[in-house]
Image 1 (cartoon, rainbow, N blue to C red):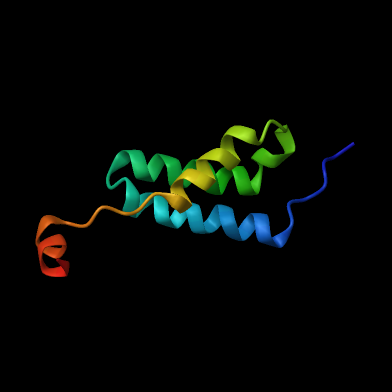
Image 2: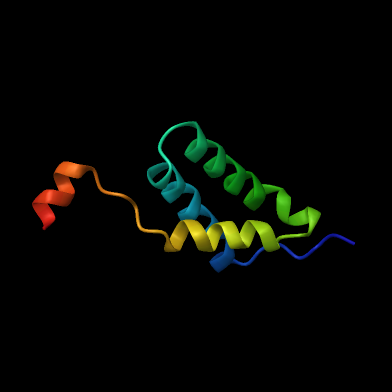
Length: 76
């Protein structure tokens, strides 16, 4: 029996986290996290065990994106 497809809200959270991951973690780490989240949206949910992925989504969406030093000084 195939698992039920993810609802629209879950898909949008995954896509938002995937986009944000590349800004939160610039470079290869962010790219890897982003690709993993997009792949999970496409295929991974069928495998079950989504707790880790959804915790990662929560982390990426809640963690503030660091500002470069020049922007941080201008904001102060």
